[in-house]
Image (cartoon, rainbow, N blue to C red; front, side):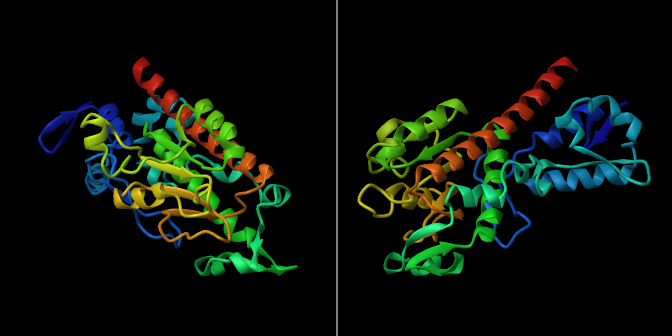
Length: 300
């Protein structure tokens, strides 16, 4: 069976793959976070939505037509059976938790890792007040309910980047966690920068490294400060270059320039090991789902 879409003849399988592989320029997560821009690929998502609506209007997508292309877990999530018997193609970006990141951790896991322990009240950044649950013995206590919500959104975003084969850069300037961060990045096939930040790595990359250099699609700050407790220069440079960022922000940090701030302790080994494990598992799971989908595409 062939479908005529905008004057082009396409098979249902090709239409299905076009929707799955569609590049996006922006999207909005279902939360109170701000709208974030993914400047990764050129095709706007509105084109995919408009095309999908035209497909659904024709009524040609019956469940039996798509069943043969939904034989593994990755592709099964892309098709939802409706009551009328038609299949609704669902883009992963439209799913609230496509990669099930909420199953990776619990609030109890955060509590056991001392994620809720902040700095003394004298070091509190005024922009972090909204994430503070209270103060105990002059130590700021972070609201873990808010941390759970923000961490799930951050992991979901990182998974979507990995699923679309984007590059992720982990940044941390704390010397005690250098090996841990580099090991985490290596195990999930991504990149890490734990040494001194050279000015212009992002903002002047064309001059320093040449036009063939590609900037990361996502920067993950496991600590948004450098080794002298000032804001890391890469936070500012990422914002200038419109690169999405995820950042673990302690009570002495400024979350304003971080796209997806995650309030939490960024000093203790237990907390850092938890963050690294969660990001590694989320990225590897997304890559595995992408591999299963690509393998199935090659077989077909």
